[in-house]
Image (cartoon, rainbow over all chains, first blue to last red):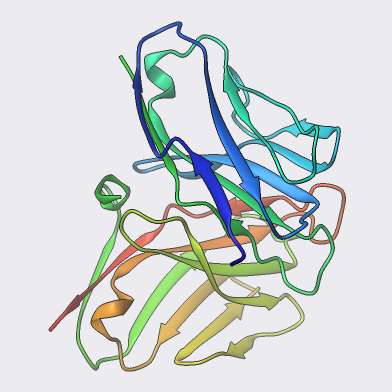
Length: 114
Length: 115
């Protein structure tokens, strides 16, 4: 089954404790991206990657890091989480060039930073 | 999840009626538009898309209309069903097929279908 898998789905942590949210896709997509979703603000892009070893900042990259060492994986790293990073996070992927811009989203990771 | 629906405009319709969800986009240079559906506790799911060289596109029970003059997009759902209850997002692509393939999402509309 074609899917984007995120882990963990739910996490409660404390300020300053490093954490990683993993994302893996099995569709051989070149493009992967992380979004955060907050009430009233919609989906905002954090980072994206056009291919292996190619990453770039989205609209709200502060406080986050990513890496793309393999095509299928695109982890999101919070080196020192803060309460304003409490949010619902989505990973998404797609083919880079195609006739549709269909992004495939994961199920989301709800993060709470105390 | 449930918190996604907070602070959102809400459209309440009766089962069987047609629904129209509207969206204003920001960039007159955007050339590709997408509608997504997000059910409670799930990630957004692609519904239908439209290129800027079209003003209408139909899918199964859904139609997207594009008015570039006023930068307006709408999603019409025919014979709305309880399973259509969700948050609906429009998205515009600022760089379709380009270096970034960047999507800008609207804040969403909550569709509530009454039985």
